[in-house]
Length: 102
Image (cartoon, rainbow, N blue to C red):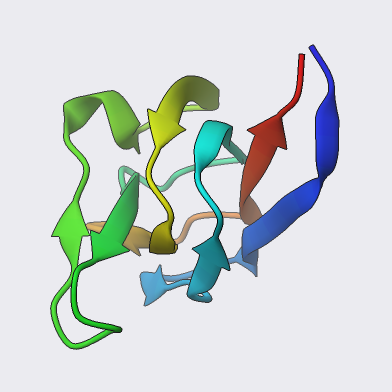
């Protein structure tokens, strides 16, 4: 598996519940990856907005992590972000969205 230049860091060393940076993607096969020292009982989830950022919808349980992990799926073009919710003192949580090219 390899990634193109379309790699986005959505969460960067997060230590509390937060909404990550919103990024626009062109669509295709993507891998959502989440890793950290501790989730602090929280859940990191990939979300999509249908209206440019007013409303956000979680993509479902397959895109929600309470431990290090990743998922690969076809995502349509649009704007996405990662969120961390329900945590108590997580340590250095990171999330990326990367286009898969092979």
